[in-house]
Amino acid sequence: MKKRFLVFVMTFGLLGCESDLSALEDDELRKRINECDYAVSLTPAEHQVCRNYHRECKRRLDEEERFVCQ
Image 1: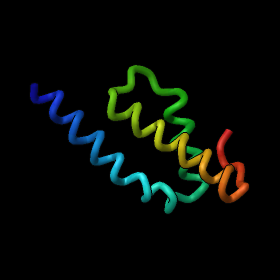
Image 2: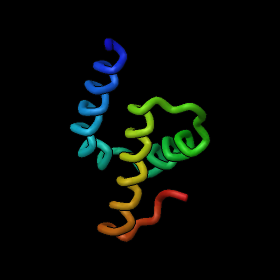
Image 3: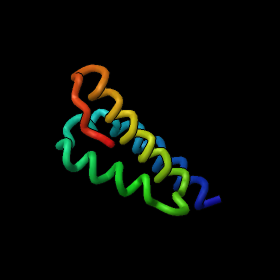
Image 4: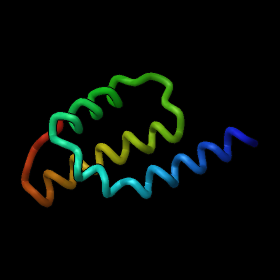
């Protein structure tokens, strides 16, 4: 029960921080995407963070026409 609550809180906390991803430098975002792509056994919260990173990469490509991720 405690673990579920923690994952719930982390997930919604991370979703709220999504706008902060736009402040990440391209190199830092690329590094984090790379870590996500090679990670093994991600928790649900970590998986959500990785999805947010990928979403930010796509946003930069679509809105700013910048290809920053592999």
